[in-house]
Image: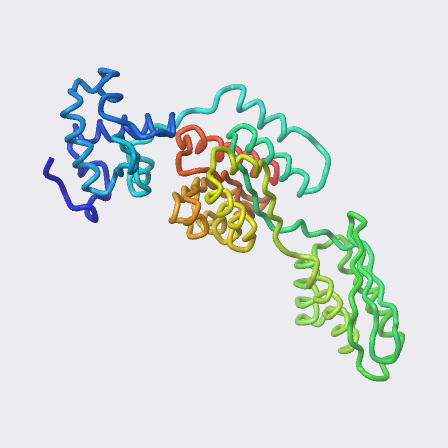
Amino acid sequence: MQGPSQAAVTSVAQLSERARTVFRDLVDAYLASGQPVGSRTLARTGALGLSPASIRNVMQDLEELGLLSAPHTSAGRVPTEAGLRLFVDGLMQVAEPSPEEIAALEAEAARSGGSLEDVLARMTAALSGLAQQAAVVTAPKSEGRLRQVGFVPLGRERALAVLVADDGSVENRLVELEPGTDPGVLERASAYVSERLSGLTLAEAAERLRGEIADGRAALDRLTAALVEQGLAAWSKDGRGTVLIVKGAAHLLEGASLERARALLEEVEEKEALVRVLDRARAADSVRIFIGAESDLFALSGSSVIAAPFRGATGRIIGVIGVIGPTRLNYARVVPMVEMAASRLSRLMA
């Protein structure tokens, strides 16, 4: 087959019909078995209507184009990462989730009670069980609402800001006072927050405070306003962040060589890098697939990530849920599962 150079093959339309058919069937067989696929295996099905010799010629051409490779001890071929990308983008036929799979996720989505992290953990565990792969989710930590605030003097130049959220959690932070601050400032600050900012999230409280000061509606003097603002800022320093939950990590080691297992464990431990990979899916309206080195993080182990964003009550993307597995993932089956999990989380967050 005379075809475009390896660098020029960016879509299946650039392959001949015969090459496209051989390539699709070979990748399907590889994803199903995990083993190199030979020409005799493809010819045996009879679906191609080609002899083993003809199939071998096509496979050789596909190898020269960088879409297939031959393991050193095998006469069969496996798709390269570039080949898998071409297959996923242009030939994969997504399989609809079964009624049982849908019911399993719906059951988790219908369970009530627990914090945001509890909900995320349950849905991620359900996705891991269905896909039989590791599943991961990332989202902002839930932002509690202010219930009560107090400022306790700790000497001439320091005070303790004690903020209680509606879920009962308490944050204690040190705040600095100007020398000689009147104790009445602490009382006024506590009263203002409790009266005007109670029931708001941290971000909402800070925004209202700035707005009322700017409009002259805040009955606060300069020192009191500064104390309130400093107290809210201090509360946020250690109380916010990102939730990262990984479920089913043991699946990553199934069938992995010692070298690959070690690389996988090291990669998954790089939590900040894992969050960055998932953040790349936040810009997508639907599922994103990172194959092997495309994710940077999983270049050594040759793993793939399938991830999809989910939205909060305002419709804004707030997190990402996905699956981590070998490049030999059943993409056609896992992609709709991830999409379904993201859709259910968006519904729960609404």
